[in-house]
Amino acid sequence: MERLTLTVSDPWDFVSEAGSNVFITEVHTKREATGQLLLHLPQPVHMAGTDWHWFVATPVPDGSWALSGLRQQQATSEAWPDESARWRGGTPAARGTWS
Image (cartoon, rainbow, N blue to C red; front, side, top):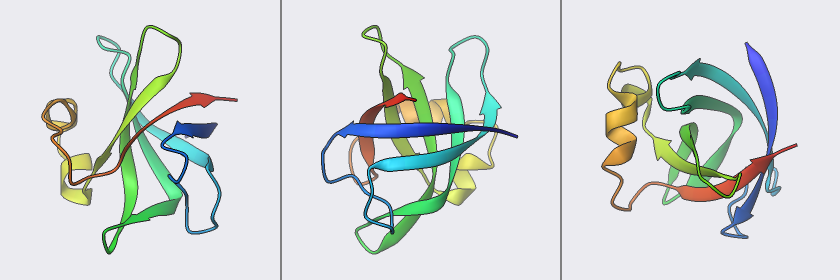
């Protein structure tokens, strides 16, 4: 499994349990048609009483990546790109870059 280092720039308070905005991520799946990545974070983001381990990263034209949190059952479903397209709040969302 490929590992990437992700630095979240927006929002500034998007942090892991360790208090950092820098995440070591594991690329679980890549959708060739869209360029989207399904990421697993061993160190979760904690938000609204929930630990978030799964995110969809979608490339944006400025070279950064838009991140949308997924619940475990969404991440293990074949429909995960569609789930992230319907994001309307309530799950973590951020923007970041790889280093």
